[in-house]
Length: 236
Image (tube, rainbow, N blue to C red; front, side, top):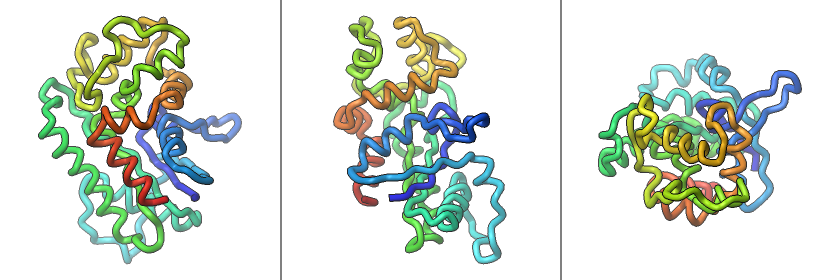
């Protein structure tokens, strides 16, 4: 299976190494490979290259809201590159504040973003398969799911009360408050107990993703990762 992937930034799907011109993968590619049971080739493309695509006349005038335009352009590029799948990664909720932990509101927002992407894929149905990869919050939420991943990654016992989260995809808070439950803040506090920083640590993020168990992610992130898992099974 040949996949063209576009994400948000280095934290989720990596970045291009401009010295070697090679793409350095992020957690998203790792999760895709962990789920897909078969040969897979993933080409990653910078978001600016996708958004900069000018739509042909046959696609103009479509009322695509939110991330729909990005998904359509990605699918068009995937067809041009002879890919089987266009995979569009988007964080479902970036707005800050404690109200973002309400399950009903979170799921509603997740469905909105997910459907925006699916509507963007629709014009290319039959030519390219579309895969929406949408954490309920952000990639850090998924990385916080499996406490055993921290033990394997750091070869140390889990710091007390660090990663024992029942529903990691629901934690939220104000990003500017270091003590909040914003996923970035929470993960930063966990990593600091191991002596690591969260900023610019793509390799560490990848290690956590690689050492995370799919069954735990499906159980603890039952809204977003389970949807991603099931969609991957359908594509395969």
